[in-house]
Amino acid sequence: MEKPKHHILVCGSFRAQGAPQGICHKKESAQLLPYLENELSDRGMTDIVVSATACLNVCEKGPIVVVHPENHWYGEIDSEEKMDEILDALEDGQACEAYLISE
Image 1 (cartoon, rainbow, N blue to C red):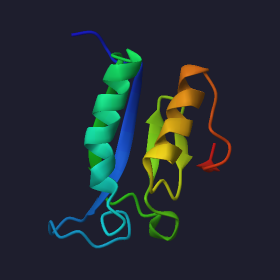
Image 2: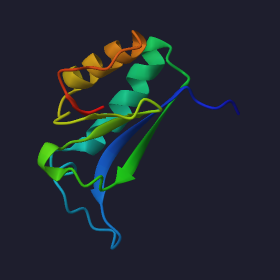
Image 3: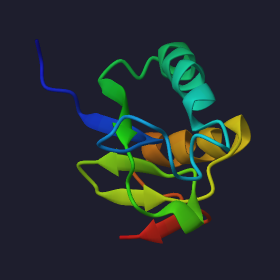
């Protein structure tokens, strides 16, 4: 297996006890996962892995999406359109400044 070029993390709000507690899951962050997988495939971006995570502890900015290895943290990613903008920027080798919450 080749090492992926990027890893996209989507906050699932789960905590140690297993119960979702934060905002991301309430804003349906899990709905982004199948969309992301399909969109990456449609774009031919096969060198990117997508994973759901435990709580990323930035609930006030949720849903949170993180792109590694760039370590770009995006907040309030609550629609496919916003995710498309992030993927467009990623394809161009850029950060999507509109939703960036850290660099």
